[in-house]
Structure formats: C-alpha cells, structure tokens
Length: 128
Ligand SMILES: Cc1cc2nc3c(=O)[nH]c(=O)nc-3n(C[C@H](O)[C@H](O)[C@H](O)COP(=O)(O)OP(=O)(O)OC[C@H]3O[C@@H](n4cnc5c(N)ncnc54)[C@H](O)[C@@H]3O)c2cc1C
Image (cartoon, rainbow, N blue to C red; front, side, top):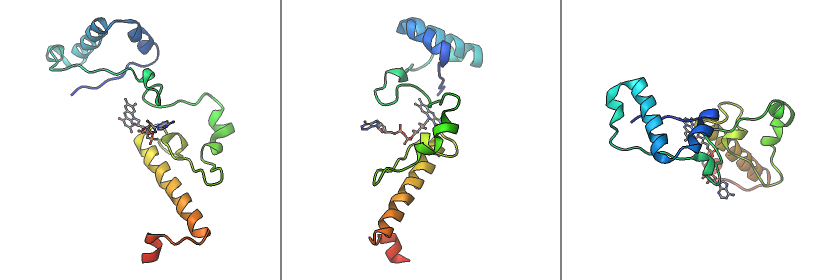
C-alpha cells in the first residue's frame, strides 16, 4: 500500500483537477518514485480532508507564529468541570497520535484528581 499527501500549493493545484486528472498526476508521481509497477494500482482511494466537517484539513494543525508562546497554556486550562484533550493540547508530538494519547492521559488524570479532591473514590484508587 502506498500512501501520500498533497499539501500546500500542491493540494490547491490538485483540488482544481477533476478526479481522472488528479489520479493521473498522483499515479505518475508514484511511478517516478517507485517504478512502473506503481502505474497499475489495484485500487486508488483519495480523500479531500479539507472537506471533512470536523477536521477541515490534514494531516495536522499548524499554529501561526506567536500563537503557542502567547496562548499555549490556554489550550490545556480546564474551565470548571470542562477538561480539554486532543493532540493540539499536547506538550509533545502535538498534531500526531502520540500527542493525542498524551493529552488524553493528562485530561483523564485531571478529571480523576478533581473527583478525588471532591471526595469521590475511584475504582482504581479503591484497589490501592
Ligand atoms: C490523513 C491523516 C493521516 C495522518 N497520519 C498520521 C500518522 O501517520 N501518524 C500520526 O501520528 N498521526 C497522523 N495523523 C494525525 C492523527 O490522526 C491525529 O493527530 C489524531 O487522530 C488526533 O487525535 P485526537 O483525539 O486529538 O483528535 P481526533 O482523532 O480528530 O478526534 C476528534 C473527534 O472529535 C469529533 N468531533 C469534533 N468536533 C465535534 C463536535 N462538535 N461534535 C462531536 N464530535 C466532534 C471528530 O469527529 C473526531 O472523531 C494523521 C491525520 C490525518 C487526517
């Protein structure tokens, strides 16, 4: 399986092509990278991530200069009982699955600590 992305100006260019022309362009590039066998794929699948309602792009978010230094901590600050998880709020590997896992673990710890502070005993802490 060969997977690739069209990013930036290449994505803009590709989005203006119809499917047949885009496929020809992509497959042609793959032939350039991997040789003639790449020119006869069993299947060709593509997705315009910019059209995904909740993603609005691919493959990850990029903050404009100054955003993280000015507003970074706000990405993780909970608002009362509302806690934030998501790769964008990670301190490492933001934009990747590792960041998603890190942020999920952090948010779960925040919620668990909050529950413990209010006197609610958790199953895991009951066992310790
Ligand atoms: C095409 C592509 C390829 C990628 N390849 C890699 C890779 O090779 N390696 C890597 O490490 N990372 C990769 N990533 C990035 C990785 O997938 C993300 O960093 C990770 O999935 C983020 O996890 P998350 O839990 O923060 O958010 P998500 O996985 O985006 O989960 C958020 C969820 O919330 C839902 N949602 C959003 N808004 C609402 C709403 N208002 N109501 C209800 N539901 C809502 C969304 O539908 C989604 O299911 C890739 C991403 C894409 C798009």
